[in-house]
Structures are given as C-alpha cells and as structure tokens.
Image 1 (cartoon, helix red, strand yellow):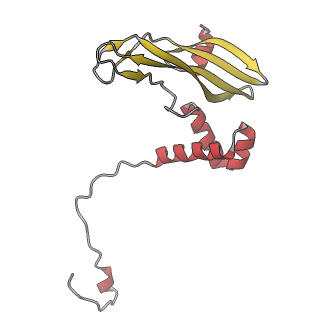
Image 2 (cartoon, helix red, strand yellow):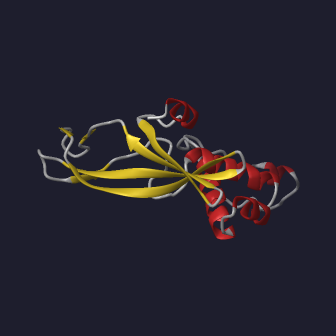
Image 3 (cartoon, one colour):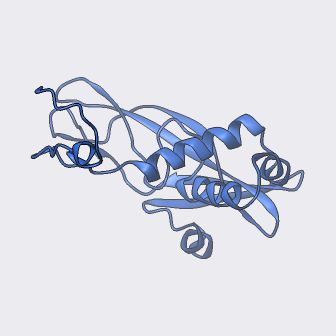
Length: 168
C-alpha cells in the first residue's frame, strides 16, 4: 500500500500495490480494499469471488507520462440466490476503459482544440477521442424536462394580417 499514491489517485476503496514504468508509460496495479459486496438481486452480503479479471484503464497523465491503472474486476457469486454480480467501481464508467476524470479532461481539450490534435497529444485514435467527446457531451446535455401541463396557441398570425380564419 502506497499512502501517497492512494491520496493522489482519490479512488475510494482502492489501493496501489505496484508501480511500473514501461516505455515511458506508468502502470499502477490496484487492489480493492473491500472484501465483498451486497448482492443487487437479493440484498445478501457476499465475499465469494467467482473470478477476477484485470482491466487496463487510462487515467490522467503524471509528469507528461501516460498513466494506466490495472484494475481488478471481481465477479462475485451470491451464496443465497446463486446469481453472479460484477463489482462496480467508483470513478470508472462500466465497460469504458477510461476514468471519468480522464474523459472530462479529454472533453475539455477537444472543446478548446480539435479531435486530431488531442488524438496526437494523448496518443489515442481519433475515433476513440471522438467517442469520449460524444459520451461526455451526451451526459452534459441531458436535461430534466418536466411534463407539459399547458399548451398555448400562437395567435400572432391573425394579428399580422393573415386572413386565414378557419376553425380547427
């Protein structure tokens, strides 16, 4: 456990167990501090790990070096209901290989520059940069629209000299 790196990363319930530098990139191996999870199907607490897969997740750069997190994705089996559940990870979007803060960073960079320039600087494909931009943009543009209660009809056209006065 590296207390300083844990504090810098700000990933709750995760700790850094190994740091590697390979070809100018930094790889941080993480480990979960939680023993188990609550089954979303039946509400039972389980610590029975069925399998663990390591997922490589891109994070913000440190000292101009790309940072990748080696994150364990644990799948639990519930002893009560027998169903499988994959552990959710805070600060990481499920099935996307970037942290939320990295996606926000890329979005801000694309707004200020171009997809091509960000792609070159971050050493990612243009399609991947565009997909990140589109996903964050969609999340930012979601509105909480309220249901319509009243609809007003526009009667300006008759006031402007329109002679069509047919009844609807």
